[in-house]
Length: 282
Image: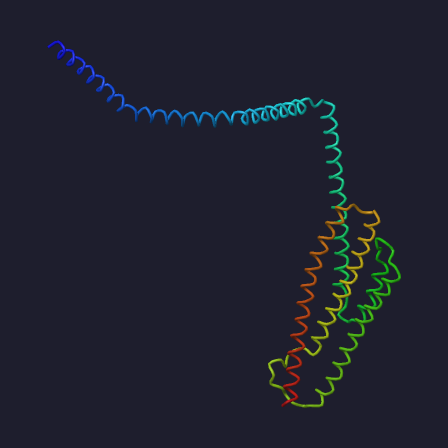
């Protein structure tokens, strides 16, 4: 009996231990999960610890840059009153120089406009007869006071230009005179819509275009002489640049006007020629 009781007690103890062991075995997976989690956190901490030296270097670099910026700020703020005074004096000199250049430029532009006005007035007062214009143009050029002395080469170019213009004018007059007798020999009344066109309309327009061509040649020579004197140091660079810009604008405008005159001449002459041809065909 006594042995049976001891065996029962021993069996009960074993059952209790087995139950505890089962509980412990049931907790093992949870412990493993916790262990894995701790290992992951440990790995992250190790990675962060590895980045700490790099962060320290960056912080040191930022501190150095901040110190350099502070030094520059202190240096900028430490500018003395003498430096500020010298800077203000230099700015005042520059402003005075700019005002002087602007005044000189306006004076130059005024003179150029006056010269242009005189040239335009002389061109408008010229007669429609080209021979009279050809005689007056050299006289105006002779009395005109240029900015610099013209060379012999420029005079030769001007003479050659006037000779070509005169030759074209004479050729047009001869061609016109050759047509007039042929028209007078035929006594008929043309029904052409261009019958009332003046006979010397084309010649007058041609003469006007030649006058503009001569005036344009004189203006180009005047501007070329002015630029040549500027290159010798007589005019400031700013004024030269502004004059070049104004000359380009004037040249383009005048070129457009000349093209319009050429088209007008071509239209008048074409209408006259069509009228004459249709009249001769009758």
